[in-house]
Amino acid sequence: MQYFGGKAKICKSLAAYINSLLKPDQPYWEPFCGGCWVISNIDPVRLRIASDAHLDLVQMWCQILRGWIPPSQVSEEYYLQLKSSTPSAVRGFVGFGCSNSGKWFGGYARDGNGRNYAGNAHNSTLKKIIKMQDVSFSCCDYREYEPPEGCLIYCDPPYRGRPNIRPNTSTMTNSGTGSGEGALITRSWSRSMRLRRTSTACGKSQPRRT
Image 1: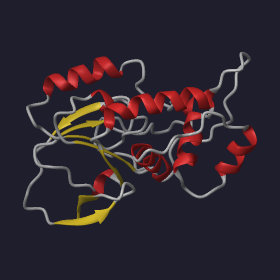
Image 2 (image 1 turned 180 degrees about the vertical axis):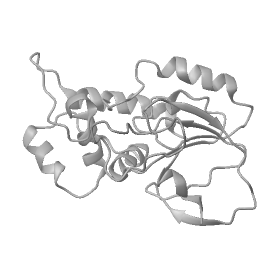
Image 3 (image 1 turned 30 degrees about the vertical axis):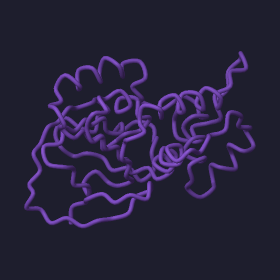
Image 4 (image 1 turned 135 degrees about the vertical axis):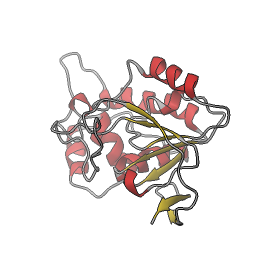
């Protein structure tokens, strides 16, 4: 599936490097999962967590995990209709997968060769989801989520100052982040922090900071 800033071309080499750093049974979290190119190639013999602040996007991944089949044909009329509709899995799929360069509703994608962008996105997401059956999805701001102790975190934050590709997505304020460049972070989170449970778009519960 097209996704602006996605790591389709380098996901395998990037995931191979991350896998080489992961310890046995060490949890893995992507706070800006996006098109899930990297996490889908992370060693599944561990807890894998994917989160994003984009509700449509997370609903899309959750519904596909539950067996929803995204459309393989999307007309421009339907594309424009979804642009102003309420958040949904199909809106997440069409908003990215059927848009120019994978930008969130950045214009109905077309080329001179009659390429079927919806069909390409359909095939790509269904192929990818086979490798993500155990991934735990959550829709949240990265600052509100409390990952497991000793979690390895891969951050590929939204592009600051670039085209608006995600509504309501937080920007990172730490030095060296927010530029669109991926960062690999390891951190042992204090167990003394008070946790609460909250439902997610996938109908699961995840710990979050309070």
